[in-house]
Length: 137
Image 1 (cartoon, rainbow, N blue to C red):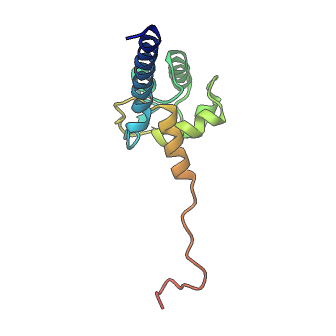
Image 2 (cartoon, rainbow, N blue to C red):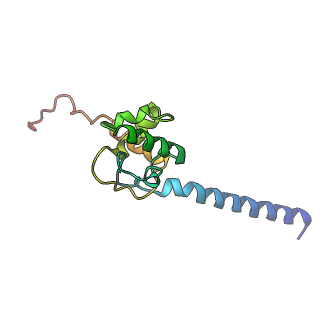
Image 3 (cartoon, rainbow, N blue to C red):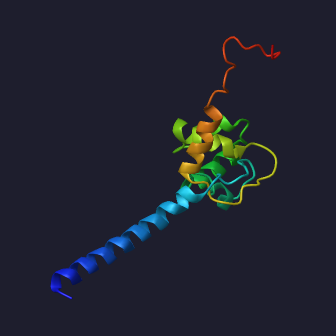
């Protein structure tokens, strides 16, 4: 085997390994058919449970807990009053948070998962086609 052939072989092996590694990393985000199910009660959740939410790390979880100690959340929209949580984050969080009831979320929600759910909830329902009545005439 010539030096050129060995170089091409090494390059091909490297490229295959790189594709495999990239595929595995992307596969985790792409393979999941549905986002994790469940919700987090922001008035009772532990820091660990709060950190399952997208864009919520240790410091934001602490801020949420500090806020609710002063005054419990009356609406989910009040999360925007917590430093570091803006309207974009609130839009991603809304499908996964509640102000009462049990916390049922048990898996991390990625930003990609949250965007998928947020878009699905914001999509308007299909309207009936013109000329068709609801009675099915």
